Amino acid sequence: MGKVAVAFASAAVVAACSVAAVMVRRRVKSRRKWRTVVEILKEFEEGCDAPVGRLRQVVDAMAVEMHAGLASEGGSKLKMLLTYVHDLPNGTEKGTYYALHLGGTYFRILRVHLGGERSYLDVQDVERHPIPSHLMNSTSEVVLFNFLAFSLERFIQKEGNESNSQGVKRELAFTFSFPVKHTCISSGVLIKWTKGFEISEMVGKDIAECLQGALNRRGLDIHVAALVNDTVGALSLGYYHDPDTVVAVVFGTGSNACYLERTDAIIKCQGLLTTSGSMVVNMEWGNFWSSHLPRTAYDIDLDAESSNPNDMGFEKMIAGLYLGDIVRRVILRMSQESDIFGPSSSVFSQPYVLRTNSVSAMHEDDTPELQEVARILKDLGVSDVPLKVRKLMVKICDVVTRRAGRLAAAGIAGILKKIGRDGGGGITSGRSRGEMQMQRRTVVGVEGGLYMKYTMFREYMEEALVEILGEEVSQYVVVKAMEDGSSIGSALLVASSLQS
Ligand code: ADP
Ligand code: MG
Image (cartoon, rainbow, N blue to C red; front, side, top):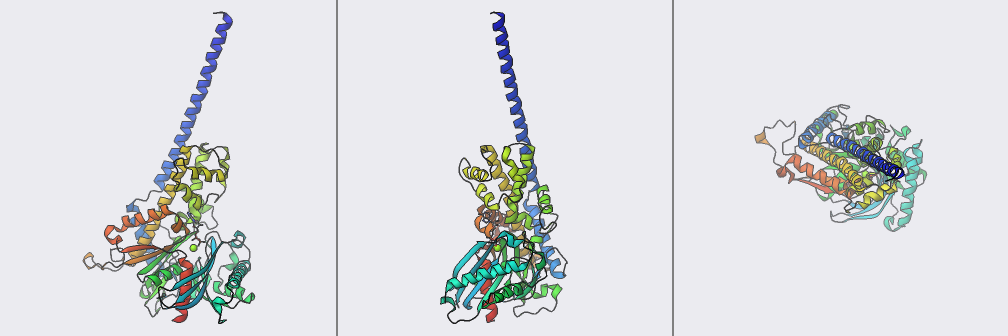
C-alpha cells in the first residue's frame, strides 16, 4: 500500500471513530435526559401518593373542620354557609319555572314544567354558552348582569306565548356558583370570587338584587325568586327524585359540596328554627385545607401564581380549572430539564394552555399509537413527539387525576362521617361501637363537567370511596350522577319555596 493510501485509510478510521463517538455521546446524553425525566415523574408520583391511610386522615380532617365551621363564624377554612333552604322539593310542585345558572365556565338558561307528580318533570330548552372571558374580569358588575339579562330576554323571546299564556310573572332561580352569605333564600351578598373571576366591586353586594336590577332595566317581567348555590340545586334535584339524597357535590370548573344538617348542630346560629328541623349547609369545601393533603411543588406554584393565592387549596387539587395546569407544570419542568418535547415546548410556559378536557382526552386515548395524544400536542404546536414521550404524557395525566379522584372521595367520606353515615356513627355522637347507628341508605348527588365527562376521574373517585368506607358500608352509599342538576334543581327549589 502506498503512503497516500495509508493516510486515506487512517483518516477514514479516525472519521468513523469520531462519528461513532458523537453518536455514543448523544445516546448517553439522551439517556441521561430521559433518566432526569423519569426521576421528575417518580418524584411527582410520590408527592401525589394518596394511600387509603392518608385518605382516612383527610376524611377525619374534613369532618373536624365541618364541626369547627358550624361552631363559630370564621372557626374554620370551611365557611359552612347557611342557605335558608330547609324544605327540599318533594314532587308535589306544579307550574313553569326558570333557572339562570352562572357557573365557572358556562352559563345556562332553562325552563322546567312540573306537573305535580314526581315523574312529570319536563326540562325544556336548555341553553348553554361559555361565559365570555371579558365579563369575568370586567371593572363593573353592570356589564355582567346586563349580559345575563340580555341572554334571558333572548331566551324568553324564543318561547313565544306558549309557556306563559296567562301573562303571569316568570319566577326565576339564579344559580350562582360562588360563595354567598345569605340572609334568606332569595338574597345574599357575594363573599369573594373564585375560579378566576375578578370583578372586585361586586364583593359585598346582593347578587339577587344585581340581577333583578338588570332585568328591570330591560323591562322584563321576571322575578328572581331564589338565589341558589349550584350544589344546593343539585341536592334539590336529587331529593326530588330520591329523598335519601342528603349530600350533593359538584366537580366542574370548581368544586363544592352541600348537605342537609340538623339545625341544632349549627351551633353558630343558635335558636335557628325550621319546620323540618334541618337546613342545607353550603360547605364551600374548595377552601378546605389539611396538612394531610398530598401537596407538591407544582401545587404550591400554581397557587402562588393564581388570582387567589392562599385560597381554595382543596379546589386547586381536584377541580377542572386546575388539573390541566398541574399537568402543564410537570411537563414544563421536564422540558426545561431535558429537550424531550423539542424546540416548540415553550408553549408549556403559558398558564392554562393545557385544558382538563385535553387531559381526559389524552388519558383515555385507547389507540395503540396514542394518536389522540399526538393530535392534542400538535394542536398546541408540539409535533413529532415520540411514542415513549406520549406514554409519559398519559402517565402524568393519570397521576394528577388519580390524586384528584381519591381526594374527592375522601371529601365525600368526610361529610358522611360528620353526619354518621360512614358506618362509624358520627364523630361527636359519643356512641360506643355497640350502639352504632343502623346504616341507612344514603344518596350522594354528583354533577359537573369533570365528573360527567371524565370517566377515569369518576372511576378513581368511586374506587377510593369503597376503599375508605369498606365493601359493607359502601353498599348503602349510592353516588348518583345528575346532568344539569344544579340548574334544574334550582328551578324546582323556586317551585317548592313558593308553594310552601
Ligand atoms: P361550570 O363549571 O361552568 O358549571 P361544567 O360543570 O360543565 O361547567 O364544568 C366545566 C368544566 O368541566 C370545564 O371547565 C372542565 O374543567 C371540565 N370538563 C368539561 N369537559 C371535560 C372533559 N371532557 N374532560 C375533563 N374535564 C372536562
Ligand atoms: Mg357548575
